[in-house]
Image 1 (cartoon, rainbow, N blue to C red):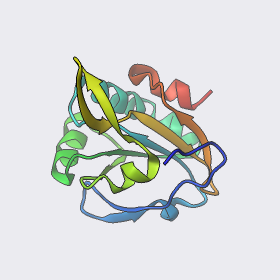
Image 2: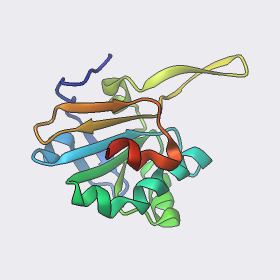
Image 3: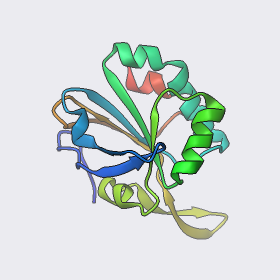
Image 4: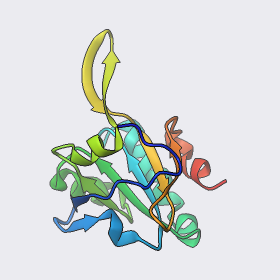
Length: 149
C-alpha cells in the first residue's frame, strides 16, 4: 500500500514498550511523528533516536508527539529506551501489521542478497490524522531538522 501526503494516516492498535496498547486515533488533536526504523541498538537507529531525544523539547514545543516503531519486541524496546534515555514510546510491531499498513515492510537487498526489512521512513501526521509529510531519505543524525523547517 502506498500512502501519500494529504491522505488520512491509517489508524492502528499496537503495544508499546510497557505492554500498554495504544491507537493512533488516541492522539487526535496532536501532531504525531511516526518513525519506522529497522532495529533497536544499531548505529543508524541509535543516531536517529538520539537526535529526536536531544531535540525532544523543541519537538514538544512545536506540538509533536514522537512514536518510534520497529518489529522489535517490547522487551527490546524497554532496553533501548533505558540505554539511550529516550523520552518517547516505541511501538513493538512484531507481526508487522502496522508496517504493512504504512508500506514500510519492503524487499531490501544487501550484497546481492534479497530479504524483507523495514524501510526507514517517517510520517508526519497533523492534528486531524492526515499525513502532512513523508520523509523517505532520513538523515539519522539530523532528523529533527528534516521535520521542523
